[in-house]
Length: 343
Image 1 (cartoon, helix red, strand yellow):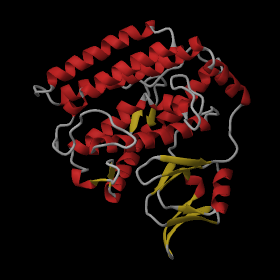
Image 2 (image 1 turned 180 degrees about the vertical axis):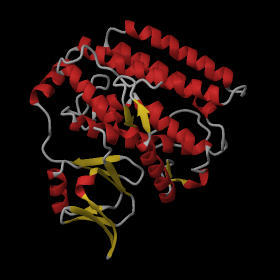
Image 3 (image 1 turned 90 degrees about the horizontal axis):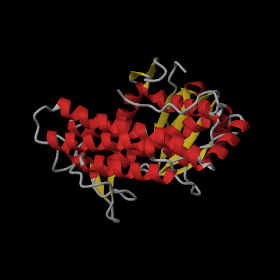
């Protein structure tokens, strides 16, 4: 767990991936653009019109390399992988807990408490980084509301009550989100979350990063031997990776939201890098998408002290570690699930 395997993002339209011995080869037309040893890759994410040979798919299954296909805008389409790893007894216990409202509520409370705590930290860090700003009062007030919800959360004895607390905290957090944008405010004004499709550049950016985070969280669940479809906070729905969505909640503020704000406030992405579609939604241009992917991958290489394990790990390994901590709890090796709380 000390090393960080790479995720290969393929965004060039018309690219074709194939096997070359024990390596992966990427071609565009007759030109070879990239060649990588398979043992150095953990995930492959293909955006839009990207093809792949069945031989490479089989080799990726052998190497336990997960392949995801997304639209150009980051909407998940399909995932290809080999035999599901993990102990069947672990999954049976996961299903039992998911069918038990009290057990599900216990896990969901810890997940939501970490999400609220991390969202509150984002607000307070913005206050610290911009002392005396006009937004300071609003940000402090929103942080206080989140602190109150956090204090009340232990009393939520059912999953529905936990979901209610999560919804209230999300409304509070996103109600203050526009105050976190300190540059390019005309082009990146935030008036509320919109999705499927996102209706403005900042929502398009957030949705894209959430899609990347969901991919990483789903891979982490599968690698830990868990069923990514069966969660504790999110309801079961055909095609929905509910456990992956549960797992990523802790990382939305810390990883996706902070990266989106950094890209906007440092002007690494600009309003001109987004376009409006015929359906009224907003999507990124190819150059902006590549800029965001590069920044996301670079952020995953950063190191952080894990608050529970007390070890230096890369940010990209956090979903993997949390999935394993959850599996440890389900196996009975830990009394409770220890969520990721950013300090």
